[in-house]
Every structure is written in C-alpha cells, then in structure tokens.
Length: 407
Image 1 (cartoon, rainbow, N blue to C red):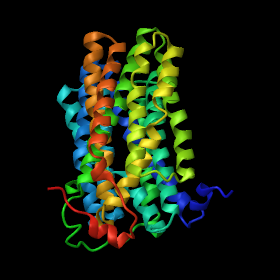
Image 2: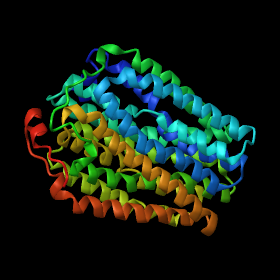
Image 3: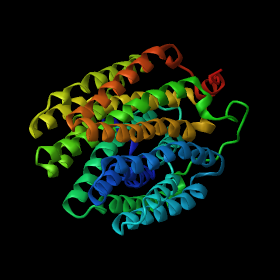
C-alpha cells in the first residue's frame, strides 16, 4: 500500500514550504508559555505572567483574522514581511523589559504589538489547497498539517519551558523569535507555491466568521485551547511543587506523542464517517481525558495521565479543519482557517490566565479543573452544532454557492 504522505510531498515545493511553515509557527505555542516561564522567574508572580501571555494571545487572536483577510486580498508576501518585522521587534522589547526589570506597562505594550504575528498554519494550508484543490490528496495534506499543529502546540511549549528552565528565563521567548525570523523568511522566499489572489464575489465579500460552521468550530476550539494552556501552566506549577521543576518539559512533551501518532494514522485511513460526527467523538475523548490529571500526585503519574488526555487532540484538529475547508469559499479560506486558529489562541490565553489564578489561589493540582470545565463546554458546543456542521458531497463551485452567512 502506497504511503499517502509520501505522495503529497512529491509535489514541487511542498517539502520546502511545509518545513519553513513548521518553523515559523512554533512561536504560536512557544511564545505564550515562554512568556509565562520567563515572567514567573523574573517577576515571581504567576498572575502577571499569565496576564501578559493572555494579552499577546488574545490580541493575536483578534488581529490575525484581519491580517489573513488582507492575505486573501493582497497575497502572502505583501502582508507577511511587514507584520513579521513588527512582531520580531515587539518580542525583542518584551525580552529586554523582562531582563532589565522595566515597568510593568512595557510588558503589556510589547505583548500587544507582538500580536501582529501572521497565521502561518492558515497560509500553509492555503498552499496545500492551491496544489491539491478538488483532489483526495488535499485531505491527507490537511491531516498532516493538523498533526503538525498539535506537535507545534505541545512540543513547542515543552521546548520553550525546557529552554527557560535549563538556560535562562528569556531563552524560550528568544528562541521562539529566532524560529519566527528563519521560518518566515524561508517561507516567503518560496514564491512558486504562493496561492493566487482570487477576486472577491458576493459570497466571499464579507467575513468568514459570519458563516455558522466557522462560528461553531471557533467557539469549540476556544475551550479546546483552554485545555492546552491549563495543562501547560498546571504542569509547570505541579512539578515545581513536587520539587522537580525540570520535569515540566518532559511531561508537556509526552502530551504530544500519542496524539501526533494517532493523528497521522487517522489522516491515512480516510475514514468514511461524517466529519461532524468524527469531531464530536474526538472532542468527547478530549473532555473525558481532562479528568485524568486530577488524580496525579507524582511526576510519573502526571506524565501518564497527561499522555492519555492528549491522544484525541490531533483528530480534533483534523476534523475541524476538514469541516472548514468544506464550508468556507476559496476566496476567504485563509481567513476561515485563521478564525479557527484564533479560537485556539483565545482559549490558550484565557486558560493560561484562569489556570494561573486558580494555581495561585487553590494550589497546582486544582488548576486542572479549568480543563475539565473547558472540555465539557467544547463538547456541548459541538453536539449542539451537529446540524450546522453537516456536510454534503459537492464540487468546490457548488460548495462556494452553498456557503450561507449566519443570521
């Protein structure tokens, strides 16, 4: 049997933009938890660390869709270059502010400016769509990207925490910024795979967030994102409480392992069940998994429960982005994908802040209750939206015509 993943990477330029895109999106995961690790060490307050991280993540969540809308209208290169430069400068100021003990307001202002960081996952998927539009390989490509996203969120966070603990507090944010520079530069230099700018028609003239499926999936992934951040913040706190702060990066790292492998398997299987039902099942598994870390009172048990709780994350991503591809017109695909990434970012911001506050007030282990609540709300959202998320077989022109804004 032929490997479907090797097939998609035979396309000219695919390996190059996929590798560059992977590096360029590592800051999505590394920066928020890197900010938490940096400021919790330099300032000694989890609430401040969580608040600054939330400022960056929330601001990026609201700004990124607008940037992606410009990408759809003007092209990737014209937008990525200036926004990346602004982001890099902002992170440089944030690192200096933490290192030199500048006033607190400088932390928030620099985090706010860093929100100009463009959505690389959306732009990578747009390139895959340009190559494989209307062909079965596009589903495989989206599955690969979903698994890569999950690896970025979990392994990137683990790397950021590990660097800050092993080297110096600012190391995680610094390396994250270097990845952004290198990855974005390599990505925009590959002009041959850049998607064409498509004309705007009456269907795609508004915002993708007006489409009901985009609203449902974005809302659900806000709470899925909150489970990520809660796991990260609570893990950092509980390993410190247990006297093994260096184990945090390992525990967060195993969060990715099972989910990454399962995501690749799911992408290769080409499952026949309706995507909206696949999404409901995946989110249900995530919600159930959030209960497990509450039982952990040792680092090995924490690692085991976190590993199990993360298994369904990649399948959640795969089905969510598969539904977006089917429900969003071509001329607003980058924006539509970015709104879903926005949901994850908002959730991570809120989860980071909420978990930090709970940890400060009630202890490290109780931070995981934020995950339990978040997972439950995500499941209820997906179950309530099953009818709107239902898809039908159609060619792309018909799917564009069928896209109807929410009332």
